[in-house]
Length: 171
Picture 1 (cartoon, rainbow, N blue to C red):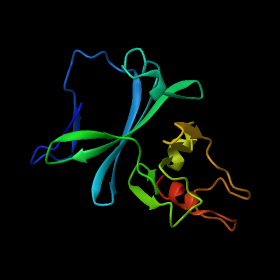
Picture 2 (cartoon, rainbow, N blue to C red):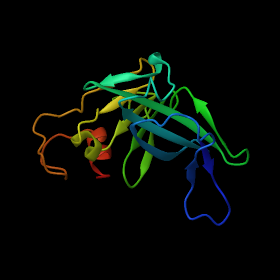
Picture 3 (tube, rainbow, N blue to C red):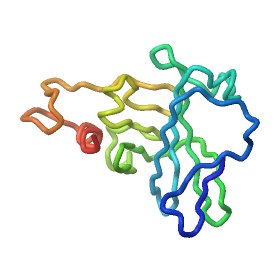
Picture 4 (tube, rainbow, N blue to C red):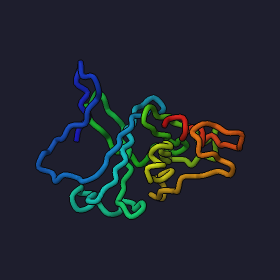
């Protein structure tokens, strides 16, 4: 696939380069995020045939609730009109991705947040997805449920961490 950044286009679009590739029976979510003066695209895939039909190496896949899943990061090279694969979102950084916006957080300033990780928003967590994906060990973690946390989508009179606010703010 390629990122189509045609002048006058309303939105950047991913387009297929080879139509002969077998279709991947997977749900794919892509998120654009600004990080230290560059644009990253975080892509999360989960589905039945990422290995057989998708062409990914089994070491690139992690299992979540019995479903093959994959998290990948690309730097968006606008002038070169291409996506360049990355090994994660970066040391000292964590990405919070959601339906309406994304945000990159310094894990040096907020050490309780895991470095080189992607955190999913509240809605995706409620749909049965994981809480965070850590690129260092290629593992996903359960969504965190702090003590006293209400099931409501707004802060309660209990102890919340920065992670909780960032996850809930983008429903």
